[in-house]
Image (cartoon, rainbow, N blue to C red; front, side, top):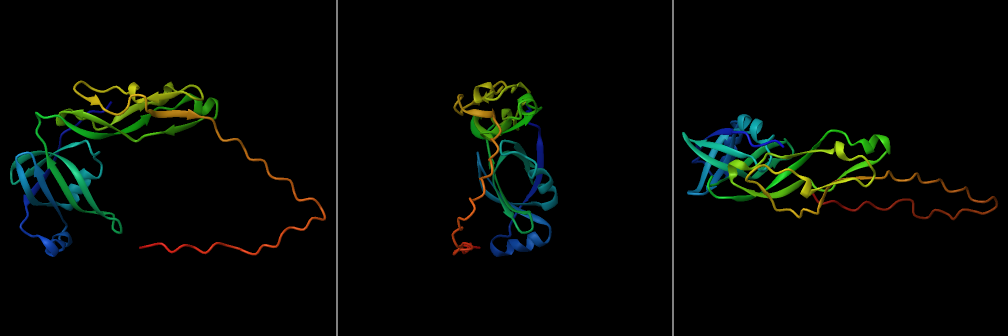
Length: 217
């Protein structure tokens, strides 16, 4: 289990809005908005490089201390807009939360170790879910659940949600009987079909290819 670390991000109040925000992006700035507990929606701006270095590696459950003009706000990242052509952040929404009120959040699942059944029985490790829903105080939210798959020793061995170890103060809301990881058997090899008997003509190929469907931009 890996628990939450403190993550800080500096920001300033933003007066530029609308189409003029693109000028900030050209200057290496990242626009955003912060709202939530005792905070009305407020436009902010951050350094793009600094924000990207931090936010690109954080899970959705990570608590971020956003410092706006010297005032600290405990917040979660609720939305990230990405320029998929350049691969850069375009806008970020932060939701301020109360450290005294429990919230629900999705926490990612990662695995560690090697399942013996994969090597010994040529099994396949299948991941059935990538995250679980939890409820906890914001400061108690784990960054992720780290699951040791070395206990999977046979075909059919599985790890369930009920097997996850939640830290104190964290309640897992996902169905405990849901499978997280399971070992399945490898698919049997498909035997090649026998060649057609001599003297039997193969049917003439009329359609040589299906026309590609148009894909929307």
